[in-house]
Length: 350
Image (tube, rainbow, N blue to C red; front, side, top):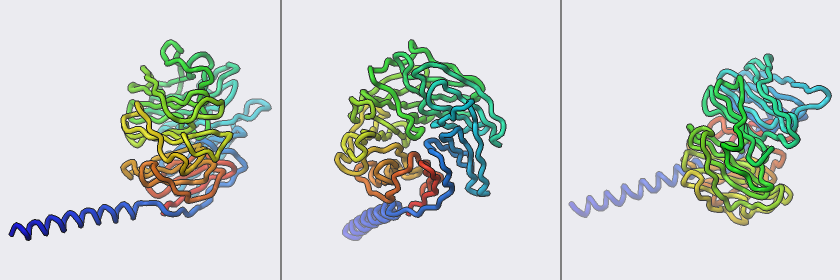
């Protein structure tokens, strides 16, 4: 009897191992098929989802959406005299869409979901003003982050659904180092999980700014990501949950350099470990965890094309050689929207 029980236990263990291996193999990405949604003559670095609508913010003062279900396409333009805005940040709530331009002066607009009612809700004038990313914690409270105009990152917040915004004084924020700023590469300088917020920097310092309470208090964590030059550092971050996170970037001027450009944390950003040193992608403008994959799968876009990891960033595989993509967001665990130079694509991961 004991021998039979032992045999059954061994068989059960082998079956579970086989089942787990089979499941992992089935979920691993090995290829991509591509559908072109839009091919406008625009540079699109910021996208966000609202139901079936993919909203985008671009250069030339353009913003709009594409509905994945009805295939309805809408585009409009916000003008500023003779100069065109370059929008690199967007955030969508159930009541409105928000975009903010890079450069001086900075203008933040609240846009109705039909795209036709546009209202200026914040402006800032300073020779160094340059906003990089924007997110919302909930329907009422949101945050936008920009380069320093004094000795801290520029951080503005809203608590009334985006109708008004307030800049946090430097006395309430950590000091930046000389030459430290942020990059408006893909609207992924900010990651939010519940009330927790992570903001990444680059340039002469590559650090992670962490707030546990919606920007009321802050800590700063060092990272091993390449730093020291104006175009080095962290360009993108994502967190799967409030413990597991990933940062990426590199040297924008040496896009094939694939060392000290990827790191992972398992303790909420306090400590970071380099992964895939001298392997995988070089400069990356955006990295995202694949939803519902337990933090095992990530996808990056940038100078090395579209690359995927099935082991939390330890190894990477190129799935698409397209180098003109700047940003990516997942619709579901096997479908993503990617946008960049003159394109918006629907990617189907196989």
